[in-house]
Image (cartoon, rainbow, N blue to C red; front, side, top):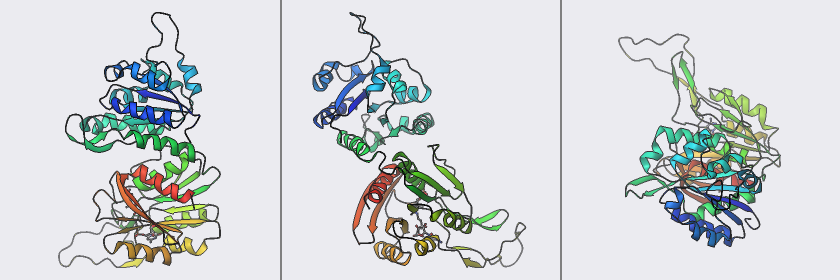
Length: 398
Ligand code: PMT
């Protein structure tokens, strides 16, 4: 898919710049025209001679060529590109991009780019975890930039953690997949449930769970990036959709979530039920704060909540795709397949709390996708955004 594509490869000043040479080679080998734009600091790590020899084009770094006075137009470059990828992206460049500080050719070109921008951060783990970096990366996401999450591993400092630039082969694959799937879901309406439900006990207490909505919102962002019309029915979460086109309907309880889903379902092509819905709710809501008393503690009687997945499974018409999740702690595969069948799902995404880094609250997940025909596809532990991409790939291929 990269053949004939015009790609700007932005390189900044980090140790991982040496990997950009491999990325450049991979892109050129795949048939792309690559224009390298490098920051002054980037040149301390890798020479423009190497990069121009491999790309077959002079490397751009300054606004002017000093001896001829030739001006390098960031505007023309921005219009020329089908994609821009900044790899490695240092904390400093990410900060400048997030705040529009256009003091070098790379950031100026970024601000002029009309094409999608991919950002592959690389830095030490503490810099990566700093609230300033986290906020700047979130801001880039909100601008529609695609973050290629750094991997965990040994860093240049010899510390081990998150901050290693993703491998060039994977970055090339992300670009290739982008061109393959862009607009692949255009015109499709997708309903996604996310987060927990809260079942009220009294005005100050509820039954809930640890879901943060990260997995569901990552699915929503991924589907929206591929052109789908996305509505999220969301339980109470602290996160927000960064893509403005995503519609969010806030609900609290399982009954409210069921009602919102039933109202939307007939009109959608795909529903992905990622929410952690409480199976039980207090049989009665006590309208005042239950007081601590002497003697035996109060007993809370429970009633069954509606099963949203099963309700939608009964209403499903030909042509609709219904995807559920299964969160298990034991007997994972059998339980997931049981849910797939009982709820009339087309696909189920199994995650197990026995896998470190999977399930509630984490930035990562490890899942197994099982479809109605019994095909089993394991997806390794990765950032939830990349897991979301793998799940959406699967749905798009249905
Ligand atoms: O939000 P995060 O912190 O990122 O965590 C993500 C997650 C762990 C919540 C997510 O990956 C996940 O596993 N979601 C499903 C959790 C769950 O409730 O699984 P379950 O096995 O209990 O339910 C099976 C399926 O039935 C799910 O699609 C669920 O949405 C649905 N269900 C469950 C109960 C119910 N009353 N109605 C339902 O529709």
